[in-house]
Image: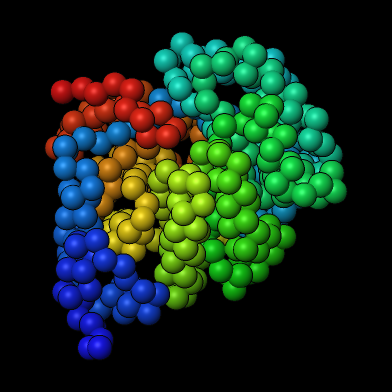
Length: 367
């Protein structure tokens, strides 16, 4: 069999729905121009989403606590348990934020904190039940792989049991935060206590088998190797294959953004906007079994997010209402967009906006 090596042949295969291998992906990123990647990614988006619609989500971020013991060098948000700036919101304080989301007409809350060594599973179950009792119409995508692994460690309980109990208490989805780069070479350098790439994948796998909503993420720009970036995408793709075959419940979407170095212990420089758009395009080409690619306005800004809609992305992201983690690291692009602002950004990019829920079901389509 003849080996296909030219970027044009690889991109033609991807547009036709074919799969690009790890080795081919590395070669493609090294040899294809940004224009070629963008055009191919846009062609794939048009085939998958030919109606010219770009979706968005009305939701809110709530960081219920900033207490964390993982010491990620790239995080400017967390505080040690003994810090005078450490906090843990009460259920009632979180409820006030949820009431504001309800007034906005929101359908999802993203509830995340840190790795707190003192919170047992009954705290999380109690919080989830409180929110479901008072806000039953709002979906709760909560915590992250490292957070649920922390609960399992504290409780000396298998992770699948932890996820089942949290699901029964009201947790609808496990977000994909904390993936960073899914390879242990970089993970051991930037966050040695955060867990392996295998542990992140296992948490998402078990959440998918539990029937939860899950999403996949990637943060690049830690001086990782190109091979690590491509491995990240192929490992997501492999899990997606597995989960879709198991029960049809895989990742709803993928979102990528660049490392924000300001105010962090690790420091360094920020990747360019051009590299961000190149990564969005490349992800759309590699992730042949993931339906939705989301732009990242909170980290990259609205201008780049609009451009990403022509690089394979079909979702603009969410209103968020407040954002604390990325902004603490220096992403000075604002922490909230109104529904009207998001709709205007989508229209400016040449698409029709449509409101969705966390499972990408269209709730409201506009002209």
